Image 1 (cartoon, rainbow, N blue to C red):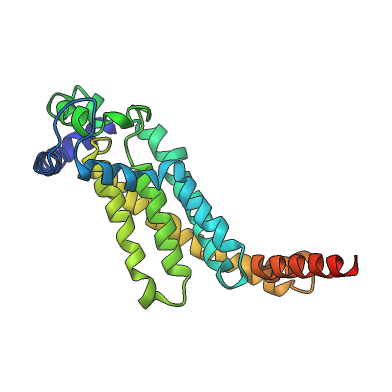
Image 2: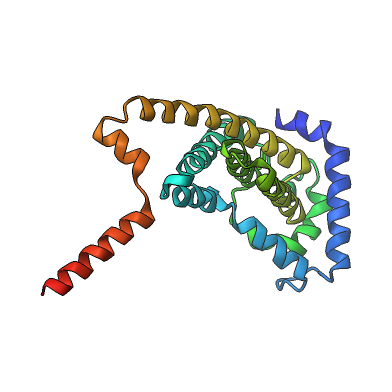
Length: 241
C-alpha cells in the first residue's frame, strides 16, 4: 500500500517539497545544525501545538471545565480521540509508509539535504508511520469538532485555518508528504463528524437523566462558580475565626 501511495503521489509530493525548499532558501535557511530562518522557527512552533495531540486534548479539557463551553470541550476531546483511532491506531501501522527523508526507495535522495536544513530537529519522531499525518489529523479533528459543536459558526470559522497551517508546517519540516497531510485532513474531519454525533448522544442522555446526581453534576459543574464558592467559604471561615 505504501509503495502504491509513493508512486501515485510522487509528482505532487516532490513539487510541493521543492516549493517548500525554495521558501526555506528565500527565508535564509541553510543546511547545518543551527536553525537560522525565522520561517523554520515559526513552522516548528506551529508543529509543537499538535505534538501527540496533547495541546488539542488540553483544549478540550479546559473547555469542559465551564458549563457554557462543555459541549464544545467534549466534542473536541472525542474528536481528537476518534482522529487518533483512525490515524495512529489503524492507518499508520497498516500502511507503514516511511517518512520522506528516510525513504531511499522514493524521495530520500532528493529531500534529505533539505530535511537536514529545516527538519532534522524532528528526527526523534518515528521513521515508520508517515501516512496519514498525525499532527494534521489531531489539529483538524479538534478545530472541525469545535466548529461543528459551536452555535456561533460565523465567529469561529477562522479556527479552520489552523489545520492547514499545521499541514504546511509538517511538509515544510520534511517529515510528511503532501499526500500524508491531505489524508490527515480527511481523517481529522471524519473523526470530528463522528465526535459531533457522539457528543449529541452523550448530552441527550445527560439531559434525559439529569434528575440523577451524576448527570446533573456533569451538566451543571462550572469551574468559575466552584472557585467563587470555595473563595466565599474560606472568607466566611476566616471572619468566623
